[in-house]
Image 1 (cartoon, rainbow over the protein chains, first blue to last red):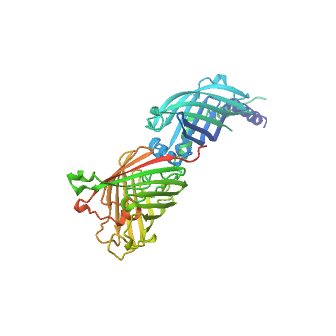
Image 2 (cartoon, rainbow over the protein chains, first blue to last red):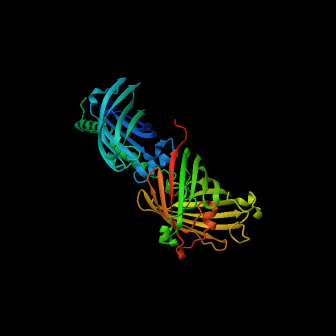
Image 3 (spheres, helix red, strand yellow):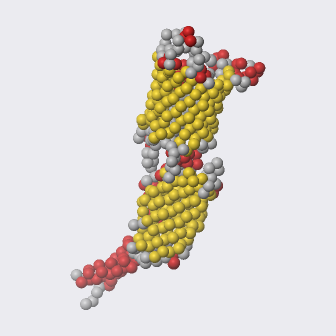
Length: 174
Length: 299
């Protein structure tokens, strides 16, 4: 009997010691983009699935058709002519925090990070390095970042509208 | 107490298993792939671009101008090809319609226009009752059209042409389906009423027709279109309109180039006042230009 108790306690000890990884996730992350030269060209997606782990991995996945524009005609052109969302329904990002040692997921604070990873969109995968901020508040992280995506990098022929968009990311994780 | 060696071995084994089970590092990248696979199926979004524009050539498609947008449309039809080299195969003369369409709510649009043919004003309202969805849960789009036209051409006072004599009504049920990413078809049962027929010798006042529309996309920006309207009864000397054309969609502009035997460009005249016949080479070259302006309030 005594040995059984010893066994259970030691199992618990070994298990906790090994299970150091924390994963945070959200299903309603927000990613928006806008064209710097045309204020009408902007859209927001509030249904981004994102996860972040304290091993430095961070992922984003979004359905292209969930980007909402002010003008229905613009949203239709975006989906049908430019991003071809029936053919390429989603965009994905898989990256790692380069300076993971600067971030303490257990301690509230604001941490500047650089994330390097692959963004797949419109059938093209491109390696990106994006600076951002991780804020830990009450033990839960939130992420903010901004970067510029060039249309030609993703083989999107929207030159009559814009050659680039500014992408804003704001995710609050649970 | 002496612990038997097999107990020690069991102890180590079980603890290793616990470590393996709990301590496995979860790979977020694999986790994302599996989430995407689970949610990868079509979410049943409304289909886009069954047709590139709200008209295929002359008749209405199931498409509705987006809310907050204005569509400025300029249509031209030149004179018949069989008018010969002297008239540059029709290019010396042109008939036109200029129109403004407005998307005033989701699935609801209105429009006004004026044609040079008989100096007619026209206006219409179109409502999409059913919007086809991806994945087959709703396989068709259905829209209702009501259109009026008013002829402002001066007539000899002895003809006593009243205001109501100058008015025409067309109603249509538009049933369309995007069969694949490239192919769309539509059937449009149409009813037209003339209060008085001024340029044909007939007692017919009510006409029925069925429009058959098809488009085949040949690239992201181009489609080939065909539009044929079968009239179940017709004015003497008229033919069923057949139009063949291409759409070039530049994103904002749609250029529609075609050959057609109709000369009218509003709802009633495009169908029922087609005096040209393909057989005689009485076919016109024409184009429509559609330009979308986003005029709704900004954020």
